[in-house]
Image (cartoon, rainbow, N blue to C red; front, side, top):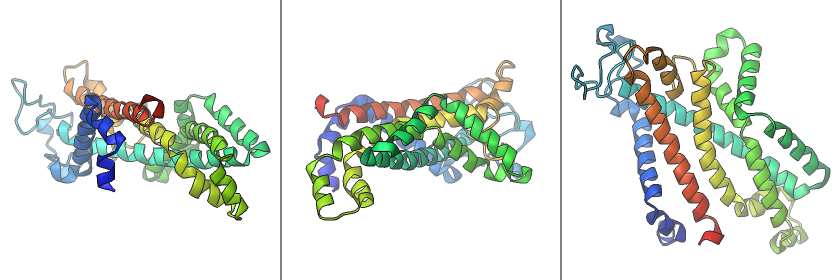
Length: 301
């Protein structure tokens, strides 16, 4: 299978696109640094026993008063900024990937059912989709988070906030997948292989998920790639606003929110470097999504 992929048009297009190759390299470095942060990070920024307040606000190593042990400096608690970024990136990626996976599962299921069954079911599901699309995604995420805070007991807020955030971001992103899959399913359901499956008595659920789904995954992969960057930005926005993850599980958005308090006092590195890491990661994901969209478009081959 690997040999077939290396000989495919998609991999040839990837090799000929410098932006795609550069973006893939950046993402691989980000994934390695975040997944293996407990072993690769210089320190554990959330181990209170290892923190020293006397090391707070050390400038980056390339500045005159910087220390080599803290390549990107330290924050107000003496935590190494580089280590905080590596740990924070892991949290941001975890939230983004699970939120997109939830949105894909819900959106693809709704799109398949609406496109295949048609009639009243399609009208009802698509009207629900249209209503949600009329609201900004960040507003829906804020609404879900607010409802969860009001319903859940106070002692469970911190322990369940991660899963509430994943649900809030995921539930705001499924309509894109539903509309795309519904359109593709409406085309596929009238093709001969679907009619043949009906004739031999295969059930509707099996036809949708075993026969039609593999033929509509191309656009889903493109949207999923672009949605991952949007989900990471949504998580960073919510955390920056103070309604995202608790301080015990800081993401890049939390690091930026904490650091912006010291931006005007001269400790710019506390917020600038997490902001750069977030921008580079999202930019690399979006560039890969653009390349994948062109590579899977038969009209551009």
